Structure formats: C-alpha cells, structure tokens
Length: 212
Ligand SMILES: Nc1ncnc2c1ncn2[C@@H]1O[C@H](COP(=O)(O)OP(=O)(O)O)[C@@H](O)[C@H]1O
Ligand SMILES: [Mg+2]
Image (cartoon, rainbow, N blue to C red; front, top):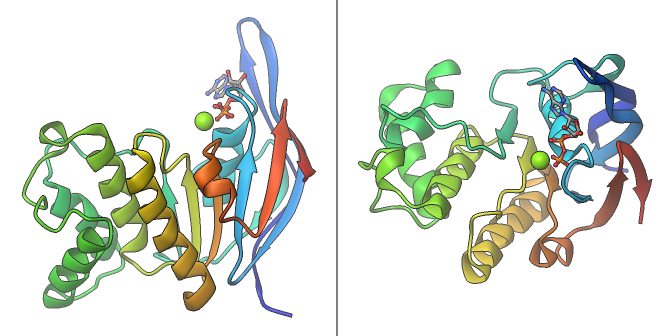
C-alpha cells in the first residue's frame, strides 16, 4: 500500500457568532495517499473551505486532529481567495514560500520560472496581482502552492475563475503531479472537469462527509 500523506480524525469546526453556533464541519475523517487526487464536492456553505483550511494547517479544529507532512514546504495550499500579496509581482508572490524554506537565490529563480510556466504564465511574472485577470491571479496562487514541490496539495476551488480549457490544463497538471510525482492532492470543487479526473469523490453536506 502507498503512504498515507493526509489523515483527518473526527475533525469538527464550530464558529461562535452573534446568531449562535455554526457547525461548519462535523466529525470528518478521511485519508489521502501518495498518488491520489481526491475531490470534495458540496454546495456553497457546505463547509469545503473550512475543512480544507484545517487540512492545510491554516486553521485549527474545534475537536479532532489532522496529520499531514510537517516540514515547511511539504504542504501546498491554494486558497479560494488566492491570498496574493498586492504589492509584490506574480513572480515575487510565487517566490515567497521558497524564501521561507531558504532555497538559494539562483535555484529560486529557476523554480519560480518553472512554476509560472507550468500554469501558463511564463510571460506575466513581472505583473502585480491588480494587473492580472481573475484567472491569471488564480494560476499565480496555484504556482505558489506548487513551487516548493509539496508532497501534499490542498486546493480550494482552484479552477473557479478559469475557463474550461485553462481549467482542464490546470487539472492535467494536478493529475500528472499526483500520478507520476507521488503527490497527494485534495481539491474542493463543483467543476465537472475536476470531478472526472478524480480518483475518489467525497460529498460534503452541511459539514458532514460521505464517500460517493
Ligand atoms: N469565520 C467564520 N465565522 C463564522 N461562520 C463561518 C466562518 N467561516 C465559515 N463560516 C460558516 O461555515 C459554513 C461553511 O462555510 P465554508 O466552509 O466557507 O463553505 P464552502 O466553502 O463549502 O462554501 C457556512 O455556514 C459559513 O457561513
Ligand atoms: Mg469555499
């Protein structure tokens, strides 16, 4: 059996709001193995972003636990809202995680070029996010998540801003990374282009997960 790179044990997340407690994610357990591309489907408000944030380590469960690779750069996270730094160019945004893991400068330049080329943005590295289209910004966010060559990729609606041809190309990149590169990927989407390339599809309803 291949290695399990992501495990969630009975993970729940509550939000306390003036209107009461929101049970955004309820008792979710799952495993994703090296080489697998798993899709999480669910309508708006189902809890996809809350769940993926916890899987990526950006948020902490109210109860339960997540196990993922722990070294810096081993998990790549594509946020639904992209999370780009406005005052940096696309290339500088993609470079940020390499600075965190202290990749030497010459290698950083090469990796950034490769990552931008992978998402079809080779000629846009100098542009700031405000000078890019929504779909281009989304692809910068994807390049930034891939640039450290993570073992685990967590991607929240990564094709939401892309036309179907570009979405298919991005999805082929993810498919290739998982199948040949042994990466584990978990992707939230309602995009049928992604669903048809998944190894497994999980449905999230009101915070509860069911395997399809
Ligand atoms: N920071 C927050 N504070 C309060 N409620 C939240 C917060 N984040 C998400 N929620 C609520 O949790 C539920 C799930 O949201 P979300 O995870 O964004 O769903 P999805 O990504 O599937 O659209 C929704 O009811 C949403 O309003
Ligand atoms: Mg969401």
